Length: 337
Ligand SMILES: NC(=O)c1ccc[n+]([C@@H]2O[C@H](COP(=O)([O-])OP(=O)(O)OC[C@H]3O[C@@H](n4cnc5c(N)ncnc54)[C@H](O)[C@@H]3O)[C@@H](O)[C@H]2O)c1
Image (tube, rainbow, N blue to C red; front, side, top):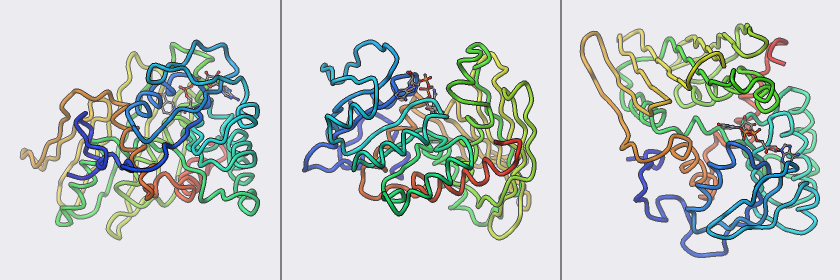
């Protein structure tokens, strides 16, 4: 069993990548919205972490952490004037990421875990790159590409690695639906568009299976609430195509991907909502995966993500180079800007 398959609750400290000795990592959490609840839940279970402060300009209720209530600030600069965190977690609306990463880089020495996507356009990526001589951008900036840590993705990646005889992945179809239509303008303010929000999850998930080459087409619809895109990739030396659908016009969250290995006729189906999967060829079931049902989906993503980040050997998918590569493809066409 690999580290990323540990989604149950009975892990020991070393399996979570926690140091068994040493000072706790002092964390500042910036942005106390929907996803902050998952960060707080996973951070609270790690003995190697202390929550030093929280930041949000909105009037949020007291943020409880292990029975205590860390100091709260309305502005990151104000918090950094009073604290020296080891890790800053930025869980704010997508269009604020670039500016807050810049503040964090220039006004602290902390490592920074920024929610995905790292940036919302190419100009912001270029501005961060330009800071590299002034601050250690490559050593300090990490992006929470959490879908790459989902248990069904982990299972399918291990399965394909164990079966070179199945040949290359030739086609991927991935559909990510979120019921954000009900949140209206608030959804656009937090997540920009379905392509900005889900496209980056689909691309980071795909990096576990194939080498991404580039975006070949992108069509956005429903005012940015839906997208259809094609991405070229390479798998075991051969070219393939991924078709990515995302939309907020849905009654429920529903996310699935199908990987077809056309030479052998094998199909691997993964359900990201249920965290399940199976592989089949013609009428034959080749393999299947399920979870014990005890771990909430986002916790199942962020628990291994934090274990990797804090292990001293962060998975490359969290690193700045991966974010650069994913952003380069994600924002490649004018319509993606
Ligand atoms: N919601 C999810 O399931 C989810 C999952 C993974 C990643 N994300 C990403 O996390 C980010 C936040 O998403 P969310 O759903 O939590 O959004 P949200 O709108 O629920 O929360 C964002 C919070 O950030 C605060 N904020 C705004 N500007 C700020 C600033 N300058 N300093 C500090 N706080 C500020 C807002 O007041 C709000 O409380 C987005 O980039 C999103 O793509 C969200």
